[in-house]
Image 1: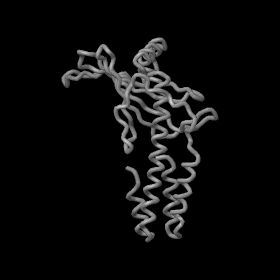
Image 2: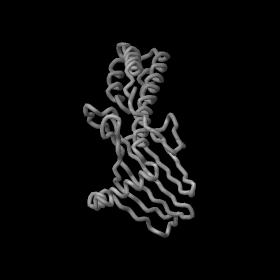
Image 3: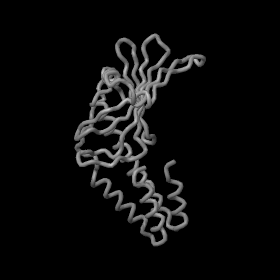
Image 4: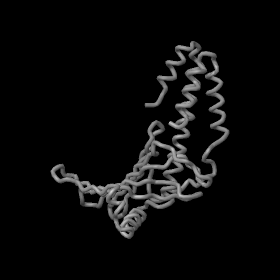
Length: 220
């Protein structure tokens, strides 16, 4: 979680002199008074519906079904490592998305793994990093097309595959939504964690108990 390790180090050192609660309250005030993503392009779900978005989870799941019965499922979460922000970029993390497409009457699934990233102020894009043809029958092996394949594939084919996903609803509006929603989600989870820790510290006057309380509240 963003900022967790630096804050934890400061907190453990501050326990001995009773400053941890003040540090937590200061951090909470800062996060609330300086919303990082206020006024940014929030994007659009388009014809997708948000199917899964638990406050405790890191991922979200979107679903769409065409009139033909074809189904498209997008699952996404933030990349673990933050990027080095440029002047015109807002979001500290890129996203990883899986796009699964299932035709009606078929048991097989097409699955694309995509990198979703901010390409400029208010704009974003996705790159296909790997693709899978998944058969439902255990006896039939699936086909995999990974990074090496896509690094050598004809640019026209690569562009055609991207256009194929765009035709299924993976538009810039959707990639904007994924980046904005997931980065805001992490921000909210961070503030909620700070508040739980503040509440715990307020009811744990002893330094040793406070230290144990912090460790128990650490996310896995």
